[in-house]
Length: 261
Image (tube, rainbow, N blue to C red; front, top):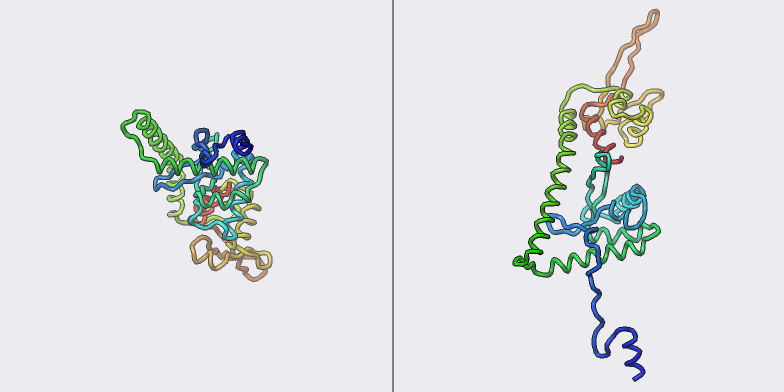
């Protein structure tokens, strides 16, 4: 008798299994289903659910990607338009990728965020396992709204990215080159910052007081050298070498800097 009373107080009936956790209050909108059926969540959503800055979440994910904890099957780089309509970097994680990354994200609401994400993944998988009642008007309405929303989001993203993609394509096919200082102006950044970026990413290096392009950058058509002869009265001519960014290199720089923004 005592045992039965105790179980009833806890809301369990003796002789029966525990009641499955209901998914009625789970916010499944924090998880999305791609066209291929894969369940995914993006870094911006994770930042919101964990109450962290998006840049900190990206930094944590970048570290996991760099050391191989997350591989190419677990994530995909994507973009989104901010409130100003500018394209920003974002990372999309599969369910496996999210489960691997969540313990490393941190934040004030890390535990709650993990619970919400796991519940959302589970709820969507349960929904996918259940057959759709296409005779139900509410089911059809929800399905049509979901498809319409996905189509609208894709159309907006294409409209935003297409002009930039065309501009980069035209730039990459153009002839000629720019000195690094002029290339920095074209990219709307300080020349010193571009010199530093090119040096850190093995495009250029210093030889004495001159910047020289790495052979790999020359072979890829990203950089080129221009030799200039200086004529001085009363002294021998002097040849100087200038490292220059090609149109192809400038197009690649614009893409990489936009991804890192």
